[in-house]
Structure formats: C-alpha cells, structure tokens
Image 1 (tube, rainbow, N blue to C red):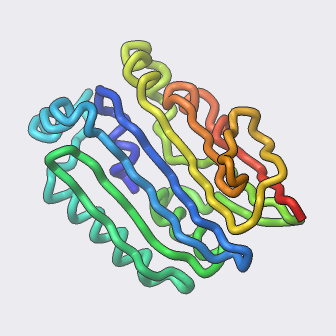
Image 2 (image 1 turned 90 degrees about the vertical axis):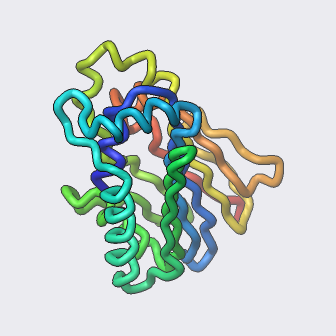
Image 3 (image 1 turned 180 degrees about the horizontal axis):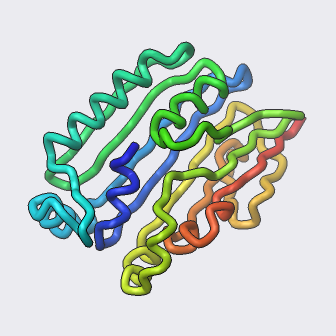
Length: 207
C-alpha cells in the first residue's frame, strides 16, 4: 500500500504494529496498525500542505479511498475473510484487519499492500514459523541524516501469538511472554531501514 511508504516521509514519532494470531492448521488473524497519535499535529499539517519534500501526500479522502480499495482487493482473495480497515483522523491511526485460512492466502494479501513485489513474507516448514521481513520501506530515507532522529524514535513491532508453546526464536531481540505462546520483536525504524532483516524471525515450538 502506497500509504505506508508515504507515511515514512512525514516527520514525528509513530508506531507500526503487526499482530498475528496463528493456529495449528495455518489459519489465523492478522492486523496492521500505523499510529501517529504522538505526532498528530505534524501529520495533520503535512496532509493539509499536500506535499513533503516534493512528494505528494494523499488527503483524507484519498486515504479513505486507498483503504477501501485494499479492503475490496483483499476480500477477493481465496481464503481471506473478515477484512476491515479503519481510519481515525483525530489521532491519525490507521488499521487493517483480516482472517486467513492459510499462509499462502496471508502472503497474497501482503503482496497487495506492496504491489511492486511478489514475495514470501511468511512460511511454516519443519515445525517452524518464519517471518521474512519485507516491509515496503523507502530505503532512500537513510540518505537523509536530518530524518535520523525522528526515525530512531519511531518503531516497528511484531507480536505473534500461537496456540502452542514456543521453544525458541532465532532473532536475539525476541521477547517471550510468560505463557510462552506470544513472541514480541521491536526495532526502531531507522535501524530497519538500514537493515530490513532485523525483523526476520524463525520460531520453533515445543513438541
């Protein structure tokens, strides 16, 4: 979704949170939240100006239209259901939610968000659940040191919950819940822009 790339052009602190509830049969629920509530004024100003560094910023109606288009396209994918999107223009919080019947269907939806690529974002093989980080992040932002401070304060978090206990996670920055069924991984956006693989993870389970 072009919205995600555009939002990175804006200054101010923000949070991206990817949540998954994954089941043994490879079905599950997915949500993506982009939260600008800590810098809503800057976000509002940028949308009113309609341009940042020569790049057009969509207005509120265009954002609504893009979210609606995603909902329509995702709903047509076999194995996808309960697709919803929401927008809060008071706090500038944007959400995407859907249920998937298989990891294949999950990957197809994520490829509608980033239409330039046809990637495997998730897979489950040999008893391991894997995330190959491929967020559509505009890497050219790392060339602008003026944005480093804001993008270091911004964060991206992955929260994955399973119906079985986790034995280990490959990414050393992973945190495990007391129940051993939820893993957390958080990085600042600047670091991820420089190395997308920081959000990679391979999770194994207790037999």
